[in-house]
Image (cartoon, rainbow, N blue to C red):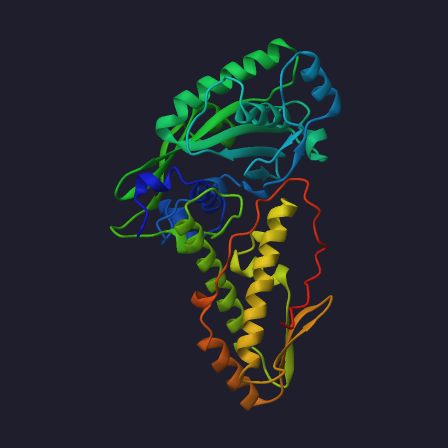
Amino acid sequence: MNPKAEELVRDPLFQVNALLWLAQPLPDEKVFREFGVSPLGIHPLLHMRRFAVHAIAPMLLVPLDVRLAAQNAGIPIQEGARPDVVLSRERDLKFLLVECKASSFGPGPSKSVEQARALMIAAGPRASEVFAEQVKAALLSYELPDSACAGMMGTLARVAEEMHARGLPAGPLSTLGLRSSETEVSVVIDSELAAFLGVQPGAFKFIALEPGDDPRPLYFIPYDPDAQGSAEETAFCRAVLFRRMHASVVAAIGRAFPPTERIFEHGAVLNDAMFGMYGHWDNKASAKHMRDLFKQFMTAIQQSVNSELTGAIAFEPGRGWKVKIGDEDAHEAIIDALTRFSAETLTAQPKPPIELFDVLEDDEPQAPSSN
């Protein structure tokens, strides 16, 4: 079932992808330069203001002296926090930290408030130290449904006021609202964010919707292991990712000229499946989860193709999965076997919960089981 527009704006995965759409040079630059809209109906406002994706879910650690000061003041704060997306503008070293929420939260004691304090520090006068690079200006923005923005700003203002009163260096705050109708989704930019971006505050239509449209297959990030959704939604998102990986492998083999070989490793295929966004992923636990899905996918491909063409695909430790294409007949046979493989039949069982300090495997792909 396609999600309704009002459901989309509460979905953190849609919210993350909305940011990525807003920050990308979408097709036909001439069209949106002249008319402010792309052929896809997406207005890439952040890209037009020269903001680009800096990192996805980076861990930003609060300086030790600030943590000690907060502890002495009796203010609970996370040691570090991961904003969903960080965008930056190279020309003036501005950094925009965005945290996505389905709804606002109150100023009382909670994990959300402790996270907010850490993010405020990261966007404050110590930002260069937190990012370990030069930052001339930073802003923390919470992205959530427009109807929840007023309550969110009330909470953030109270949390920031308490921090300033205790001498903790909190940074400036803003909201990025999402407003939906049956025909479009708009972003609502408050005065603080507008000044930071160099635009007028207000509502900006950024995506057009037709009745029955489902934008999820167009997501830059079709699946995020950290996103909280229903089992049905999670399965759908994983299926989109598998279909994209399948298309990436088929396209690479189709472009080959025999005799040759092709190596498939997780970074290249996942980056292709996510239109370059996997390379921005800074959450190592989530990235490992994605690598595990890739291994599961390639093992299924290997077993399927090799059942028809013995030895066509082999795993090589330290390299990845190698496809050997001896001649034109072999080329056609491998393409035929690949195109008949259905990613829909691949069962992706839910992984164990991702813990921040899990011991991670190295980046080498693991050999598929012989069982």
